[in-house]
Length: 116
Image (cartoon, rainbow, N blue to C red; front, side, top):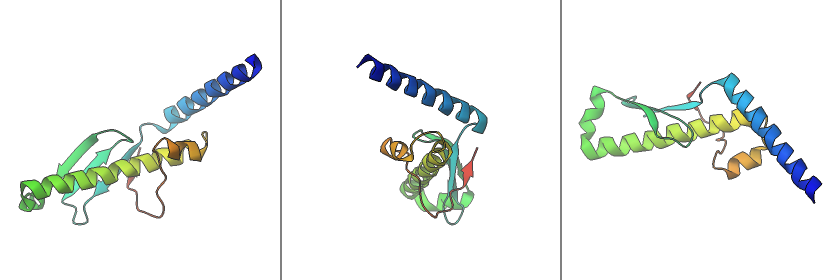
């Protein structure tokens, strides 16, 4: 039993080190999303709050509630894009099924607007 625990602990350490090295090489992972008309653009991190929000003058015509709803919609898309980017980056060193279970799903056939 102790050998099994030791092997599992070693595997966790190895994966942790591989992920740390891989992320250090790739740099910060963010997702970028814009509304179809370009009025709202958001940069977000996987699982985190928006890092940047840009609003054009045209977006102000949406009114406060409309603009707030559009920012939230685009922020969620940017966060999904960032999570997908994280999944794509880490699936080289971590089982992709485990990444999906952790909430970092890889989106299919979409323009992600990824940034590093």
